[in-house]
Image 1 (cartoon, protein in one colour):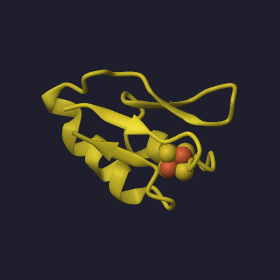
Image 2 (cartoon, helix red, strand yellow; image 1 turned 180 degrees about the horizontal axis):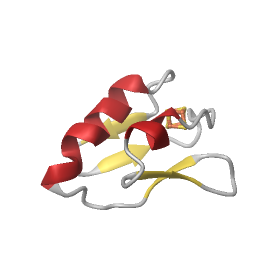
Image 3 (tube, protein in one colour; image 1 turned 45 degrees about the vertical axis):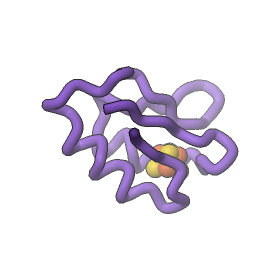
Image 4 (cartoon, helix red, strand yellow; image 1 turned 45 degrees about the horizontal axis):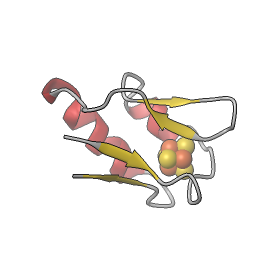
Amino acid sequence: MKFKVDEDLCIGCGVCESEADEVFEMQDDAKAHVIKDPVPADMEDDAISAEEACPVDAITHE
Ligand code: SF4
């Protein structure tokens, strides 16, 4: 499963990193970045939790 962060929407709140720190990382631009591509099966549940928790719906997956 592949996840994406829309950097135009991301407000840099860090919630996704809290939910799935092996998949999402806050970087110097104060935006979240996907650091596992594709996301391994055993991390998908956490990544989906992060997607659902994002307050601005900046995270999507395919
Ligand atoms: S939860 Fe959403 S808005 Fe917050 S840092 Fe992650 S992608 Fe950005």
